[in-house]
Image (cartoon, rainbow, N blue to C red; front, side, top):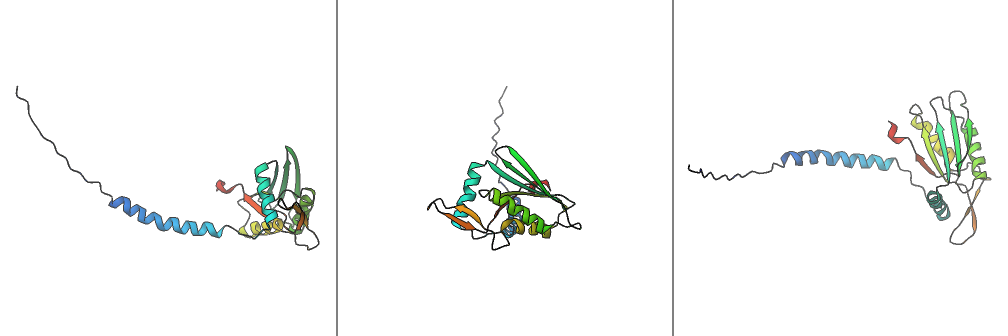
Length: 177
């Protein structure tokens, strides 16, 4: 039996044209989406003491404030301090969020808990963008120049007064749809 001697030399090239075409389509999409993501961030100039207090609250993670708005515009605020929960509600006013009552309740909560600066915000899908912005505006700062809140400056040890109530607002239901 004679052995057949077959030499196989195979040369092939990887066709990267389709991969490059996909990448050329994805790059503009990624650039556009990053531009929209920047539009969703609200940068505010916070005093350094407030920024330090926010970071301290995030590090300790013992106090949590959850603000929920349902489809009927009823606002529910849940405060969790070391496992002890308290719940407050603001009923809607003529099918709208009762903004003055919400602001007053948030001021009272801030007076009792001056070291909380972060809110976890969970609006229902039926709540309009305009209403979401209004709730965020009510929570961010005190509208009254008379009402101010103490913040301890970590560097100097002094207590400074600020009109910021809850400047750090985090959406907790962004992945729901």
